[in-house]
Image (cartoon, rainbow, N blue to C red):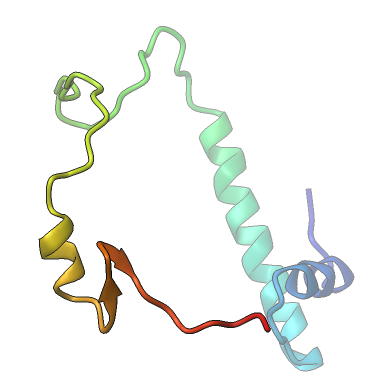
Amino acid sequence: MSIDTKTAAKVAHLARIKVEEDALPALANEFNTILGFIEQLNEVDVEGVEPMTSVTPMRLKRREDVVTDGNMQDKILSNAPDAREGFFAVPKVVE
């Protein structure tokens, strides 16, 4: 697959990146380099290779899924510029 300057301009537009007209050929070339690398990765035989979460063997930590209120209401509200009756107080935005 080859990316031309028209496609590079479209990708830049979709990504909301301003690219000058004279920089589009270089951007298209970079996209082609990336796609070439991805095609190289497709050639690697991964048959029988298990998916990994890390390069070092490790088991994910597990904990019981329990809902709590955190027991830190006073500590959290101490950072608030304005707190009333155990809640954050904010200015009214809708009249």
